[in-house]
Amino acid sequence: MALLEVSGISKRFGGVAAVQDVSFRVEPGMIKAIIGPNGAGKTTLFNLVSGFVPPDKGSVRLGGESIQGRRPHEVAARGLTRTFQHIKLFAGMTALENVMVGRHLRARSGFLSGMLHLPWARREDAAVRERAVEVMDLLGIAALAPLEATALSYGQQRAVELARALASDPRIVLLDEPAAGLNMRETRELAKLVSKIRDRGVTVLLVEHDMSLVMGISDEVLVLSYGEKIAEAAPREVQSDPEVVRIYLGDDGC
Amino acid sequence: MLDSRFAKIGIFLAAAVAVERIAVLSGAGYLLTQLTMSAYYTLVALGLSLLMGYAGQISLGHAGFFAIGGYTSAALTTWDLSARHAEPVVAALSRAGVLVARAGAFGGDVLVVHPWPAFLCAVALSAAVAFLVGIPVLKLRGHYLAMATLGVGTILSSIAVGTAALGAADGISGVPPFDLVPGLLRVAGNAPVRIVNYYVAFGLLAAAMLLLSNLVWSRVGRALRAIHGAEDAASAMGVDVARYKLGTFVLSAVLAAVAGSLLTHFNAGIGPSEVSIMKSVRYVAIVAVGGMGSLWGAMAASLSLNFLSLRGYFGSLDDAVFGGILIAVMLFSPGGILSLDVRGAILALLRRVRPPRAPAPEPEDEAAAGDGVGVLGKEAGEEGR
Image (cartoon, rainbow over all chains, first blue to last red; front, top):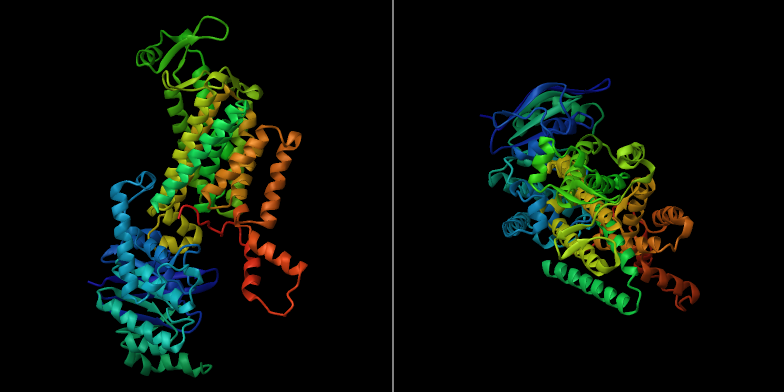
């Protein structure tokens, strides 16, 4: 059974068909990439899947359960977390605290237990902290833990955002242009990280411009153009697909 | 982390004791009355500080929640039910001890609700109103939320002024004392219990401070700061944004109602000025002065400004002073008084007065001098860390 199954999903914004009748499946344990030129509807597709934007038509199923119409926090609670194209770290909090918020779902202390500082809530919080440090350690950014998150370098912020998305031990993580703004060395490190995440059992769906990243690590690539799916195959096949070549190279040579 | 929390509250309580001793020994014990009242108002400010500074939501209707607490307590403990003592419900409540007979102001006994159940009703009613109002209103943001809460405040204010049973423009007077612990702790405004009342109010304030500082550094507090920092990202991490905003709104309304109820017993009455929009604006101004996201800052600002106001230092310009303070804080130090970069300002002044001989650029100090200006509410304090 597919972990994530999107069928016939569509979304219009006014007169623009941002996403049109797109269907795809993500099998457990794979890295799947969504590529396409600017304005192809990649980010909208992410927003539809993660509950930020309700679809006009179509359905989204996660682990067999429909998550359509669910709000983002409910989608997250079912094991799907994400990062953002424009990094959205929590200002005024340290990198560690940011990652600890990522662990929110795995704890349950509420207003009362928090105010009363109950022993079980303290223990729970210590476990949250411990796990957050572990995740940061896994991504090689443990040293950033005590630093103000929004003061870090761009690449470091991307890594913190990734750690935050992984902290709840999701089943699938959606990465929205994780290599945007990174230099070549950082992009290579990111590719290694994404593979590492997958090796630890987390399925990855990513939107990306950077072809070197996509072709190097993806098991499957889905190509979007003007909101429609025009190809879906292994990276090598996609690269030789004439339609894809036309979109990426033919028209304006980008 | 926890130790520093306890240490701060210990210092606060020690300071409260010192102030009480100095006031009493120097023959200025009457000041304790205004300090006690300030402490109750500060309870409202603390709740609002949590709502504004941590959850990032504004409320221009918090005087309303204070008034729901005060008016409910006042009404229940003064409405005479003796004429209906034969009715089964009244009789049952009487037997259960919810109703008590006491000497009325005009002779003869009156049958009224005991202050404790009245207090619980007051807090529950305020929480319920905040809950029901909060569900639709907290979907709004920024200006829209401010205006909607202003509307809530206006409605509550009109209800207070327009309801005969609540004393209309006169309010409710003759509210009896509240024996928190019979024979030991009595909330009332007369001179013999002045010192006890001072400690009740400041003890409550210290307890509220401890609870809220705990909350800020708990899972919920982290989620609230995350909502303030980036709401989208918080919800993508599984934070139920609407629920946490609502929870904070209700919590702040509960604190306001506790303050309203107890201060009404202390003052033996409550009037519609407590529910006016200017009162709500005043709470917001105080939280802004203290610094959004700084519980201790809000407490310091609230205790001092309320005390000065209650002592009449602002004269008939009372409301104007708070309006002016709000404008000044927004213009010069949106992060609150504590965020003012005093050292940077002094250095800049010194440089201007006596320019350095060598033209040595100091980029770091330049950066520091610019720190005082920030986006409203974005300058989360380091309090309680």
